[in-house]
Image: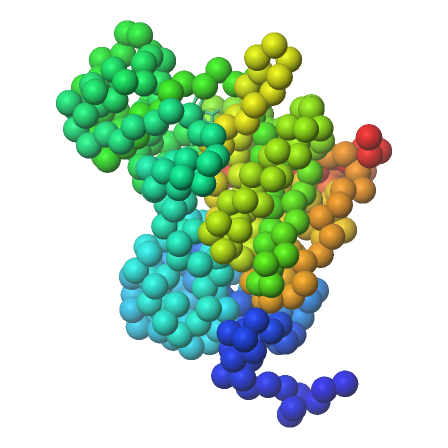
Length: 379
Ligand code: AMP
């Protein structure tokens, strides 16, 4: 066994990372964002002997409860960012709307995984759709919108129904509004705050599915099985695995996710959301969006797989070999939104339910408070 005295220093550990080597146990992984995803990443790092330093402006962040170190500071606090970078061997993030300038500042002194390019693409729906299209991946028809005249032209080109979405900061249906045959376009633009946007053709999908994929620092890739997702009021309600899609559609979804990761020279877990359309029994996939991080529709992997999406993200960013992504059970993940988490006692008593609560101090409508995984025999 290596004695503590002989453990590599932080500078040596960083050098090893840069050289594509693995981070030794005891290394510190920085995570931007202190929500439930950061919490579950830190929980997954601990059994590997890896520590997490969470950076988040909110003192009540659920990830702080389970992290080795915390920084409570604004994302543009340069002094705090530099101190954070100084404590780390590698840095990652749990949400994609971080200021790129902060990430670029950190990247000068510490490896950022996934890299800034993936973040830039995923932060901006126009950049995302353009990137996907250029990579030969099918997406809904789209057009950029900067003003009312631009919106009129875009809707004339794409047709109604359509969806108007802000380019930035949209999630869980926020920052988007439908355009039907009667929609007044000026009103629609005001609905999204007049922000730079895109118009997307409305896709009459039969299902929404997603793939959680992972790419290691050595370029190895792996995917979990495809999940079928049902939303309620624009928030993910359930993810069911396996998705009821044709085997060739599932193969296509995995191939697309791997193609995206390779094109971005990606390291870490990537979530890819798809629309499935069906014509004469033939299924096709369109990518709706990509998330450069662990993803809500992958929470089932915590209980149905030997190695979860969280552990695999940690493994990837630490330069470790990826763990197996195989599924030993079928699974249904159900989010606990707002007051649904008040049923925790009954859920805890339900031996068929694996309960995950995020430790949030306040219940609010629409807030993700936890989730439940229910397993059944693998089909
Ligand atoms: P997004 O924020 O882009 O993931 O959109 C949230 C949800 O709105 C999706 O999961 C779909 O259910 C729906 N949606 C988004 N874009 C479209 C579209 N172009 N056509 C039909 N439904 C859409």
